[in-house]
Image (cartoon, rainbow, N blue to C red; front, top):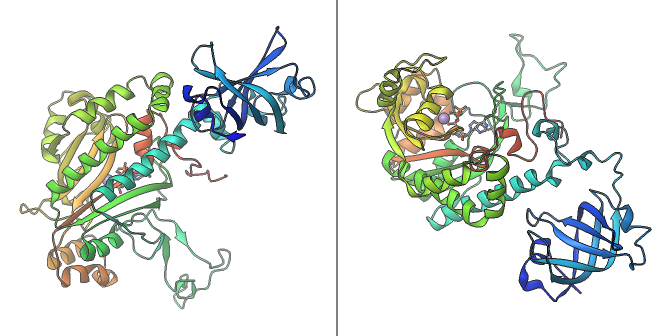
Length: 464
Ligand code: ATP
Ligand code: MN
């Protein structure tokens, strides 16, 4: 007896084979002719396999007729051609073994449709729904595609720390890591909490970015990337922010901003193409049930060139748009989501890469332009989601970098190791960060990023 997945059992090539399939019941329907139809799903694909369970089965009355959504089973039987709609095959069961019952009175997914908000309360069960099965497979595809892309491009995968004592953005909003007693922390003579007695002997945090450490490896090994969990303690309850998310951060020696933009564009197109090619069944589901523009949008993006313009040009476009924005537009102000959406959805109808932002709104490590006012930053914006990538050419000049740190109230001494990269054999280099969940959100068309990660962590929610 051959053990196969539901996906394999649905293939016409499987017809005539004796197989065993494991999975969970999605539906049971009893026919008047003395048999039952079972729909079984095992997560290998969106679709179910249909099982015909005949009343001749020894446990037909005792087990089969009691099967309900959520029950787990193993079915043995022969795969035959199906006359039914939407399937080439069906399994004619010779044996149905029940592993676990799911009481229809209690099983939360008994009812067919729940809102995504409701399903968030059942993070432990929602992977059993069509939408979250599809999201899980899409996330898997994108993760693999990320690695394939960078490996094909000759990048080295490096792991950067999750616990850090440096704040990459030079701002707050980090989660503290400590073993001190919160109720009674030790205090120094000034009465402040004495972090010298903490585990790492100084204030430590969960990382907001692996960039600085990636630069260490890029300035030794050329082209590298990190891909791992990232944490932001911002109290922003939006549909695009998580407190814990996954970020991929390539960092490349001898790359300038143009090389960086070219790489980012090639990268996103490869991810979208892989989703269309390898996850077509799930993509069709998203297109039908979540956002009926997503497949067309991705196909169009893969074949077109991203619009590239400077922040200054974008501000001029916004000011000349005649639109009334909630937040005013002005040179020197950060762009708000509504501004980004105007550019990507109304003005250019596709991805836009904005470059050369005012130095005052960007971190210290971005390379200062000759005008002294702007830095070699780039943000890749896409319709609906807004910023999907943020990156820059890095400041490779020691003196300029130290000045920028002081301007932003950072102590260069604390970053001695980062400055050493400029002291010894400095090189032009560049990199960017892409949030995995923003990609999943954009590709699937999901309205809320909380539905794009298995266990979302947001302000007030880390239950499971
Ligand atoms: P935003 O302006 O959207 O808050 P950011 O400018 O703070 O993002 P970066 O520090 O540039 O973000 O991080 C790089 C990428 O990481 C972003 O382009 C985005 O794709 C992703 N990202 C950043 N913050 C979050 C978050 N809180 N949740 C999910 N993804 C995020
Ligand atoms: Mn950014």
